[in-house]
Image (cartoon, rainbow, N blue to C red):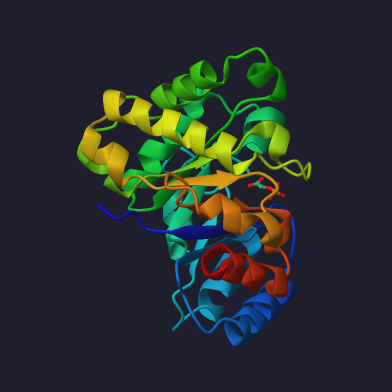
Length: 253
Ligand code: PGA
């Protein structure tokens, strides 16, 4: 089975509504070919404007986080229904910045993935080990524990739309991307775990994106690896020219 190719931009806490619309309009003018799914995750406040701006294009808009609850007295939270109402089709869940800075546990992440799937949003589920964990030879144990806890109790047939992003914490925002061979080896380890813990069919079907200092000059060699199905990009996704370069160098180099 051929897995979908995906390039996703995670804008983090950058861009106002006006800046979002300007980005989308410029990117629309720059891109002629669409060799992959193109996903953009602006801040919550820009979701509705971004969704309107991408109408008629293949771009998809999604959020960077959501609540695991349906609705209620949760000051400051945003529900899956609200995201869909604003035009989101996917949601990033379990990003390492949320795990580290906002104390998101595997259990919370599991709740959120369940809720996203129940509401028909595609979860982009992030996992990744720290530098210390890799140095101590614990990467596989850490990643498989994140996978098992994050996906606990979810019926296999609901996982058809899941996307996984492998983002080593030491590579995010540091300029020190994983080498293509290290990323490929880790993606293979993730896939082989999914084969055992879920099913061979799902392990073949679920796209695994690499994230962490992906730039136009390293994306080509990363995407040549057979188990790397795309990229989740922070810094280099903020500028339309750089975003276009990611797509061109990723698929035409
Ligand atoms: P980066 O961020 O590309 O700036 O390293 C990736 C991410 O956090 O998703």
